[in-house]
Image 1 (cartoon, rainbow, N blue to C red):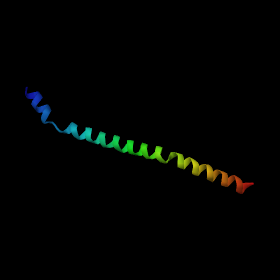
Image 2 (image 1 turned 120 degrees about the horizontal axis):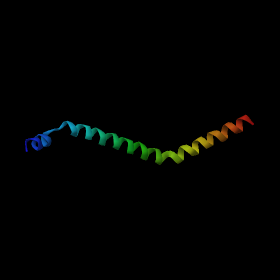
Image 3 (image 1 turned 90 degrees about the vertical axis):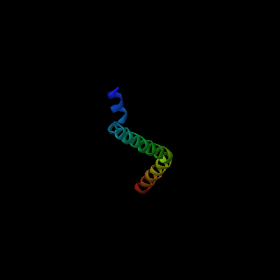
Length: 57
């Protein structure tokens, strides 16, 4: 019983879990941002590549 009470009072593991959740949230936000602007970046790089090809010709 004392072990259960001590386990319920322990907070050091909660901090690690909180950091893990924060890291997951940041990763998810970056992933969503990349997916949202990915098509626009691909179009921009294609435009730049075509521009360089035209200049070289």
